[in-house]
Length: 271
Ligand code: G1P
Image 1 (cartoon, rainbow, N blue to C red):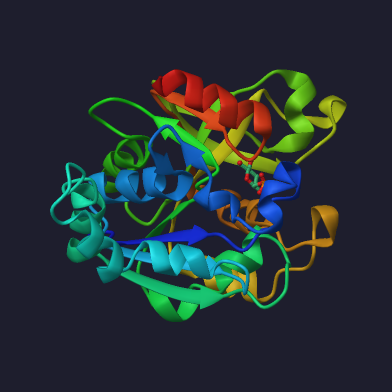
Image 2: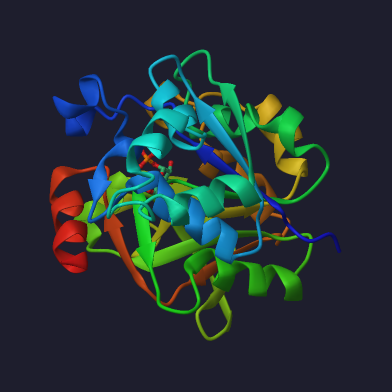
C-alpha cells in the first residue's frame, strides 16, 4: 500500500455566508487566534504524513499562494526586531512541503472541485480537507485518525462523521451504515443535505476525506445533484454500495468556520 502524501484543499468557494469580509478576503484566510484558517488544515495534513498540498482556487484567491511563499520584504523588516521569529513556524511549513495550485473554472460543487485535482493526484489515494471545518484534537488529529483506519482498510474511502442535531441535516452529507468496531461504520447509504424528515441518521460528514483514485472516473460521469452541483457525496455513494466506504466517528472537536458563529466560537476556544 502506498503512503498517502497528497492533501487537496478545495478553496474556490465564495464564502457568501461570511460576507462582507469575504468580498475581498478568502474565507480560508480569516483569522482564528493567531493563524489563517487554512493553516490549521495544512498543519493537520502534515501531522497526518502529507507533504504535498494541492489547493483548488479561483481568481480571487491569489493571497493563499502568496501566504505559502517567501516574502523577503517582510523578512527584512522583522530581521532585527523582537518579532524576528514570528514567521518561523510558517517558514518551516513552506520549506518542508510543496504547494501546488489549480483553478476551478466554474463553481460546480465539491465533487467538481475535487475532480480538478485529478492531474495532481494521479493514480494514488489522497486526502481532502475542507479548511472551514476546523478540527482540533490534541496529539492525534482527525486526518491522522482516518489514516490509521486507511492503513487497516486500504482500498477504502474514509469519511469523518459526527453526530448533529436532526434539524441541521440539510447542511450536511448524512450517512447510514453498520458499526464494524467502536466509532467505525461501514457506510451503506449517504445523502447530500436531506431535509430532517428524510435524514438517514444523525451522523453528518465533516470536511475530511480519504479517497481512492477510482473516485475520479465516477466524478467524471457524475450528474448534477443537490443544488445543481456535482456532489462528492453522490460519487461516494457508488463506492459505498460496493462496501468500500468507511466512516470514522472521530475524537475531537469541530468548528464550522464557514459561518460567523463557528468562527467566533473557534476564536474563543483558543483564547
Ligand atoms: C460539504 C459536503 C457535505 C459535508 C460538508 C462538511 O458541504 O458537500 O456533504 O457534510 O461539506 O462541511 P458544504 O459545507 O461545502 O456545502
